[in-house]
Structures are given as C-alpha cells and as structure tokens.
Image (cartoon, rainbow, N blue to C red; front, side):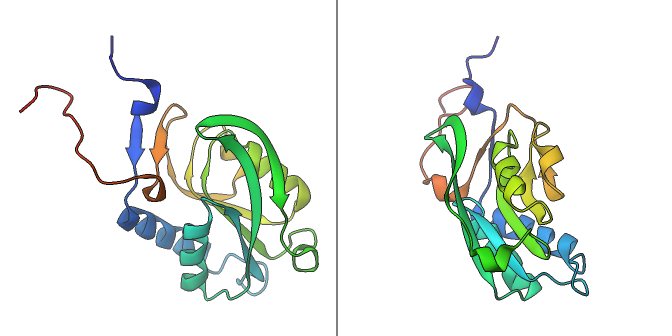
Length: 167
C-alpha cells in the first residue's frame, strides 16, 4: 500500500518542457489549417492555454490572438465549466479557421463547452487525459487519468523529501 496521496502521482512540467512541447504542437499543426494550411486566429483558453498559445502563434506566425476565459476549477476541485469572457464574435463565427489552444484536456468539460459555441474550430492541447481525448483534435502527450500535471506557473522551487531515506 502506498503512503502517497492521489495528487502525488504527478507529472512535473518545467518551463523548458512546456516550450518544447508547445513547439512540437505548432509543428504538428503547421499546414493543417483550412486557409491554405494557415489559421485565421488562435484563441487561448485562459489561463493555462495562454503560454502554449503564445508559443504556437509565434511558431506559426499567427498575429490574431484572442482568449476565451473558462472557469472549471476552484483551486484543485472540479466545478461546472462556465464561460466568463468570450472572444470577439465577429472573429469567431462558427469557428472555421480558428485554432483553440489549451494546456490540458482532462475531463473534456471545458473543451466540450467551448466546442459547443464554435463547432468548426480546431481544438489542440499540449497534454491529454483519456477521458477528455474525444474533445481534442490534436495533442502532443497523453498521461493517465489519475495523473496530476504540475505546470510551471503553479510551482516554486523548493526542497522535496526523498521517497526513501532522509540522507
């Protein structure tokens, strides 16, 4: 039996790793847009999608970037997803030519909500869990459903006790 808590099955992502994985996402998306392979705009799902969206926008030379603010967590507890701020309606239309980016698809509830508003957008995440995979069109790395991803913007450097021993 393990003494670890469920959230301790963690996948720690550094800033360097986020940058590498976001660039890999951009490479996977390059030439896949409906407008001669390009995208009309990128929409980041805030807050986690902002860093990867910035990197993808740079790599794919997309200058039109907006956000959709969705709240689906209260601290580390899941809640019903609600849109707090929508992107420009004229820009979005039904989502055609729009690349929607988030850091992670977990349960899929956030992407399901945004997809219901923009059904023809292309949804891409850096990381995906099995339960949410049907909601994402493109992703880079899959992790197990019970893994908690620790993103660099949520972390601080500090000492961590080893699993065994005290030396």
